[in-house]
Image (cartoon, rainbow, N blue to C red):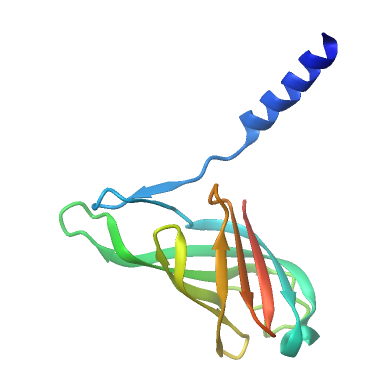
Length: 152
């Protein structure tokens, strides 16, 4: 009996602390994840960027796009920009706060276009995946780097 109560208490605590996804309702009625805000980023450089190593950083995602003139709501296509906020990067160039780290466009709750931006401004096409709850994003640019973002 005590075991069942203990397991139920742990499960309830986990549900109570789980973050629900932020949602934007578009004028079309479609609901998409609101990815804007601050995120913790695990940045893993590999391939041609391996010299920059692996480190934690903080990223702010900004949503941009068209806005409905009547409602002021954002409409498709929704563009995202990920910029470094504070940095613990090993090199000064890649550690500049405010530097664009990635950009792309959303199609529903998936990326239709996504690019990772190197410290010298070069854009690398990449693939991204948004978790089912909208609180984790994985971005991978082959032979360059991987970014795993977790909502703060």
